[in-house]
Length: 231
Picture 1 (cartoon, rainbow, N blue to C red):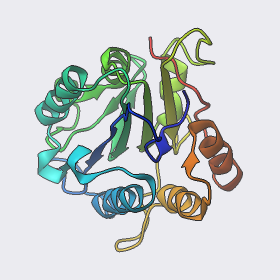
Picture 2 (tube, rainbow, N blue to C red):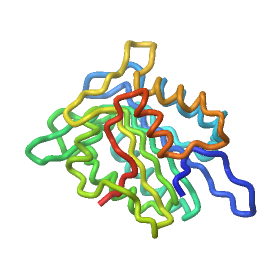
Picture 3 (cartoon, rainbow, N blue to C red):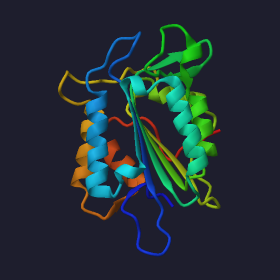
Picture 4 (tube, one colour):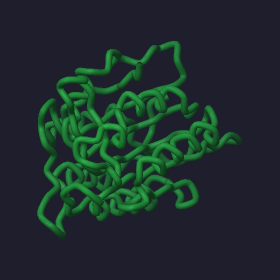
């Protein structure tokens, strides 16, 4: 049950392959990024063309659409709407912050304000959604800073239970304390470039998450081990 990036199998039961893209260049109150939205669009295009992710099952929260309330409302909707046979990929391309006093890593939505944690999204909240969304498989791709800090602060990271028919996977581009590389304007982040090359070069009808992680580990300094078991 590890296949996340795959074409729908033959048979009477066809799961839906769902994609949630959260990408923010134009922050209201924080420094802007260069390539998050363009990279997200490239990810969506490749998954649609080569892996069967349909536009009807793709949600794009870009720039001012990626407010804190919109992100959480979308996750709430997915928790209600997705079934146990469905799969979900969540891609977050934006800024993050880690605070030592709370030992907490946060995703920063488009309306985030510096030093106002009440408007940020703690990753522990994302972890709760990973647990509550009933999808069979969820892959989180986080091209953001402080990705490795999530693995230090979240208590359960390791192998999925063999008795479970669900899997949760986390790929992040950065280690603990590391700031992500957005790339020069008009280019792409190095992490997304590596990811897209692997997806484009894949000649198999599917690409499961552990193989994707292995290939990324060879071409990129991949920090987050797979699979990921949210608290």
